[in-house]
Length: 138
Image (tube, rainbow, N blue to C red):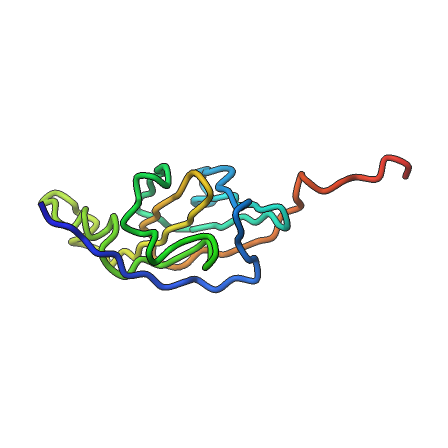
């Protein structure tokens, strides 16, 4: 059995992760793949307008990443090697790996994590957090 040691790069963002950061929603539509990520301080949409695939796993199933990726470092990483893309490339019938130079991204949350095979990093848009208190007196 081949063990892949992951190598990752942090995707810089003004939205700093902490232990409250979660993957709230994953949605595939005509506009691409949208991943809603939020913490107690912010809520964003990470959009991949063109993706070849994605998977959602519990953080416990990605233990080999935690020396490189954790919420004290960030929430979005590019996986340079040793991730899902490397694993798929070992399969003879993984056509995407033969036709395209798919890049792999990993969005992590406290529980769920999303691996994405895409052409480019996500476009990040800030959303209004549903956790903010609304003044009912106005």
